[in-house]
Length: 173
Length: 440
Image (cartoon, rainbow over all chains, first blue to last red; front, side, top):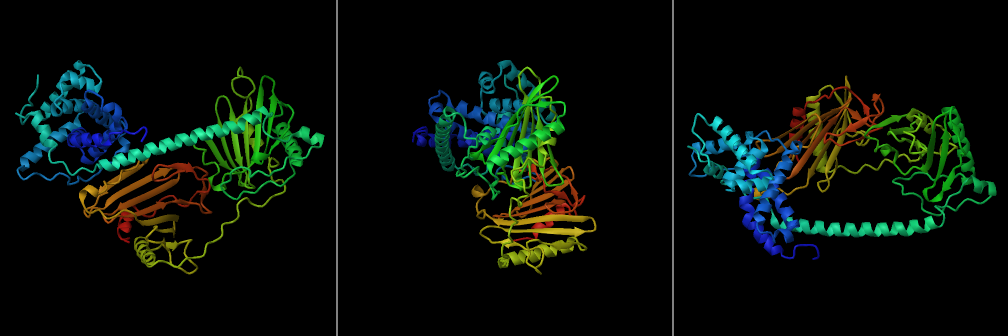
């Protein structure tokens, strides 16, 4: 079909292989699995529309990550579009091995992330969850490496301030 | 010591099943691409067709029209064999001979200009009959002491249903409804004044005033003056008091009530009687002697009812609908997400009840208009919607002639709306309680 990706199977295979990581990244960015699915779906749709070009890129993963990041930042700029559920949905069941403390830690880190400004939060997710370097993070966010370093330092400083009574946050050089 | 890598990985572990259906996503995009391609082809075809029509007309000296010169020469009117403008309802067609209409409208407009704009000297006032639009057009130059304006006047057989007249008058637009039923929508910018008058006899009158040269900043004619000309009774296509453009709606025969509809009627009636013991309930759709509320519809479509609630403070209006659209949610991956809270100026609350019902509660005010609306999205797939307002298209109350906004934030002109009481008799919590009692 003219104008459509001729290798839909390749796209499907690619999307399936990246779906899980994409959803987790989106979840850490937005803190809500429903929204994370929306963001991932948006990103995958955009990638499908440009699949012919994306598939020829050196690093299609970076494009996919950037797309979900932009989708989230765009979404943040339209807060009235989001719902604000008043009850927490029991979406994530605690694993058998996860004790109450582990669950509390997980909620704590999500709560702390939620308090950070969007771009600062994105910096942490890209650097410490996606394991990107300072340079790669700067490229993803479209800013300078100095900005990434300062945003990282400030984000960690904020986390440290909140966790001061528990422990220190490990920093990467 | 907390390692941020580990913390973030732990926070994102054990995700719920994905709601993303890749095959559906691909199918949707394929359909979208196909639709876009068809739309593009249709637009291209439309443009080519428009050119094919416009070019011969332009080459032939403009659209077919009949003007005062034709009247003087005794030429017959063009034959109106074309279907005329696209009409959204059964509006009347003008029956006056076009030669008579051209002369009459010219006199009416001249007199109106002289009356409203005594300091301006009008040029020749000459209407032209435009058969394809079933209307008349005139362009008049207005020379003042320090300016020269152009006044463009068009009369067409209204192709807008009176109920929707002025619906486009939303932003920086003055909307008024005259005692005779004429709706006036007036807008202005620095460069022009525009008034559209929708007459109850089916005439739509458009007036546009603008400066004759780009040097002049804005027309000298004011918006009020243009509106005054628009209000001239003689500027109509139906000079001899034609009948109303829209026939009175015939009351459809009352269909027998579905068993579920009857049960819902009883349930809603009981709930309202309990919540508002002194109120009188009436349903305009109920058959003579039938109970109120009176649900109509079926399980295949929806069950709907509208009930007027009258008490000492006035009348409020409750609209209820129950719909069974979605299949029951069996497994989490197929479950729909909670409904998104729409944007509402005043407020929205979205909650998930212990039984899994997703509740939307919305409240909105706009001037004197008040709306409470709730939606209950049940796990069995049914949706209950209740909307309580203090306004309705009913007689009585204070005529506002304002723009009304629905609970979903959609605003539109509501010329027929009247505020029937100042407050609403039920709280949103009571509406939720009533909605919970209504089940398919």
